[in-house]
Image 1 (cartoon, rainbow, N blue to C red):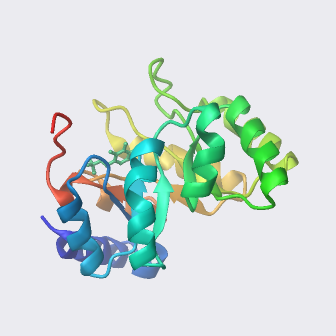
Image 2: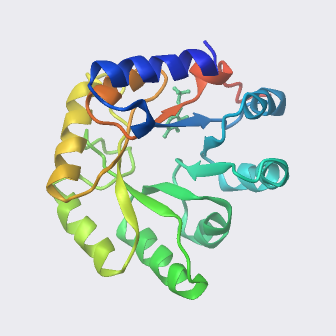
Image 3: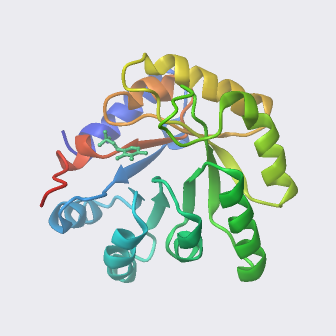
Length: 218
Ligand SMILES: *Cc1c(COP(=O)(O)O)cnc(C)c1O
């Protein structure tokens, strides 16, 4: 698999769903990947990336941003409140707004800094105890809270349970977004991004299918 395979896969899934492929943003998830693989994807012209860790992003993206000024980096991993300030300087979007405390911290910093990345609320669609995210039944209320703090909420994000059919989770996320007037849907990874597009994904997060397997022990 490669960048161009995934781009064709997105175009094909969008066409089958009667959607414009321009309505789907591909986040190339570059966490833990060797620099030469990321560099190659940048040289192929891709500009939107997903990262999970604040420190890793601080270490590697400033130099690439200098060479490729139109690069966009989205935070897709869990964010500790004490790293929110740093994250707001590093990321163009945060997909992991997953609890009231973090939302309040971001709101306070946004007031102070006069700017805020685009935000996605992470929903724990499978209500998994070990997984981050707002429970589905609490999401309407949480969206309202975020809006009352003037946070720029663009949409919702989910990571379906590994053992379950992801379509059910994509459909649930789309339903919650629609009834709250949100248009952004961050869902779908290497194994199921085409399915996610069928359910309305606007942001697919694809890592290993573009860059190869991640080696966490390197
Ligand atoms: C790592 C990660 C991805 C990419 O996963 P792949 O299976 O490599 O495509 C997508 N979303 C999140 C939240 C991730 O942490």
